[in-house]
Image 1 (cartoon, rainbow, N blue to C red):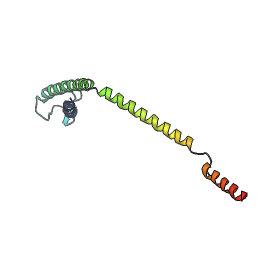
Image 2: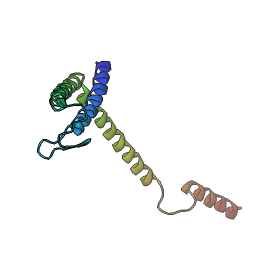
Image 3: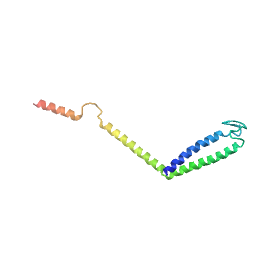
Length: 132
């Protein structure tokens, strides 16, 4: 299914570009100005307006069919479910990272100085030296 989806996506993109180009080639019926020139002159001959209109209709129909086909294939392949699972996994990872960061900031002492163990050792050494 992934291979079919990839092929249809490439065809869909090519079709989209062709539809845009075909529409730009056509002349506007009310103003008589197209991208290649004006009025009664035609880039492809006298009957090109009919041919371009038919090609446009076919390409737009193909565009719609490809769009619905891709949507159907993606919905059947579980693309939405995979996306939901990935988003949930990312949320869990983010919350776990925030909890770890919060735990690390709580473990760090607020004041800087020697750790408590070192302070106790120094006090014990002072007591030992004073008792001698």
